Amino acid sequence: KAGVTQTPRYLIKTRGQQVTLSCSPISGHRSVSWYQQTPGQGLQFLFEYFSETQRNKGNFPGRFSGRQFSNSRSEMNVSTLELGDSALYLCASSLGTTGLGEKLFFGSGTQLSVL
Amino acid sequence: AQTVTQSQPEMSVQEAETVTLSCTYDTSESDYYLFWYKQPPSRQMILVIRQEAYKQQNATENRFSVNFQKAAKSFSLKISDSQLGDAAMYFCAYEGRSGGGADGLTFGKGTHLIIQP
Image (cartoon, rainbow over all chains, first blue to last red; front, side, top):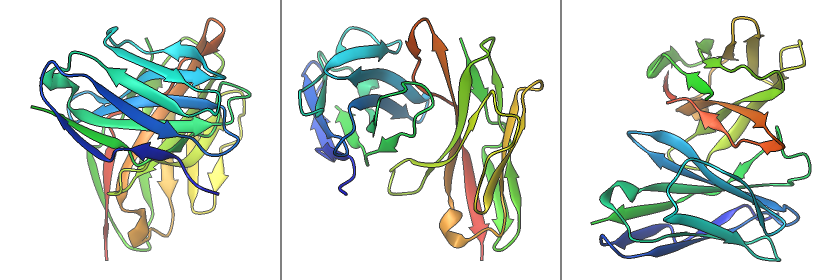
């Protein structure tokens, strides 16, 4: 069974640009969550999608958005990039049926550098 | 807001020995889960163990076990017979439910575990 796949692995952008990251969950998983990991702030929850609907959202500005497609694949978009958006972005998938306490399966992340 | 505190930025243990990683959390909720995740250099987070707050019995997974003290809001991870492959960052995480849905994981800052051969 294939794991969670995130593309691309590395990305370099300049301030003011926008970026789209992609996540393909494990087959059969309907929930996809996104996390930001930085040395200063640690791991922070961005949002969760289940059956193409945003089910929960963390405390991030509106520049961070996401969506989920009918095949459960998800994308997250960051507009008007700032230097502080440089981070490892992790995607995780789960069955999504219980919502709370589920085992998350993580991808290897996309390392975004903003210059 | 819920907070998770890991007071040990780094721990070192000899191979085959036992090590305990500490975690405390703060919440006013009664329905929640606690987790330990491992992040090796590959960056891929891996679930080590999970504990439901309503269950009094401490969770165990092979060499990994937890000491869950609900009243003290403490959730430590014990790794027995440490192996070189256990070297990684270990994150304690909390997930509660406010309103109708789960809140997403709240992570601690992590503990870097070093295994000495």
